[in-house]
Image (cartoon, rainbow, N blue to C red):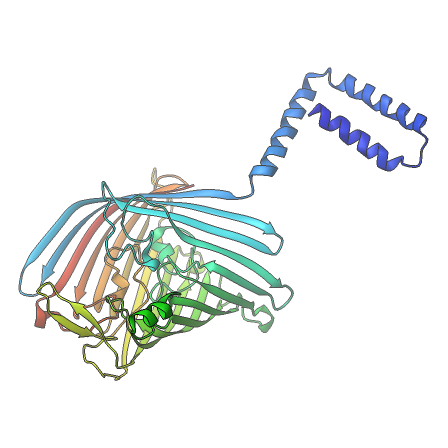
Length: 461
């Protein structure tokens, strides 16, 4: 450290006194070094040196700020099938770890990332859901860390109409209004009724504050729902049809209502060439998803939070079907929400999700506990992009109805417990899947009701 100070002094004097004669310059250096020698005799000088060293080290290594989010939970599932068969799965324990990171690279550029591990206790199996791209790190698998988010916010324009590009693996999971149940701030951008899972793409955000609408912004997005760079070559070699990429286009309008904690979002998203995800990966059609949501947080300082989401899904089959081989070896055609080759009939589904949460004032030793209630309902042809939901039942994809009640007990500013239960009543099969025709549960003896009771511990720091 002392050497660095001496060099700095000499360099500074060399610049300031470049025009002075050598003798005068040497006299000034000797005088300063004498003063430095006197200062170094004081104990405080050593402490100052150590502090400066620590600052220099922190400046070099603290390029990225890290955080952690850890969860342990236990679930008990009860399944009842049409016809009366029941199955129970109790004492199911799981761990979830998230490592968050962020860095302000320059004044107009910021990086954000999140690595995720989610596994059942002692589990090492990677099931068919956890291996899909939107679900990596979102559904229980082994102890691997997956890149769930990795994106750059790049401010291209400032002023009254700012323009920001968000490039990379997007903040598209755990969106509004999951933050109420998770007891966090809003963690993502898009309505969780329609989107939940990892996604790659690019989004342009245009600030519309100049319009007079509070907190108004327009987002235009592009991404890939499926991409196979080698598909054309493989198709040529195998003399089969080319599998086109699934291209995703979206527009999102956000604005407030002039009330603190309010948010409204209107969106339209289109997907071209939806892939069957069967062994032959056929392009089976296109779909549109329209969503409207409103959130009101701590209404008039009443400790009450309310939210409501409504969405419409529209599918346009191409007439092509993939194929699914059953356990008995039989092969069935399966298209976009139908099973009939050549079918191009458009189908429309809808769903809504509402909820409320109340925060108690501090009760004796209890630190502001919270209670909440949610309800959602989906129609026969309802389909959403929520396959990457952390909710094992993916309740928001339900073709039927679902109720969830919960109690949150904060432990300290970093940790809380949540006790909850879900009741799901399925009316049609295939909730959460775009492949195959929905059928009435009673007609095929499929899963009729699911009950899940859970207790979880959350720690964020």
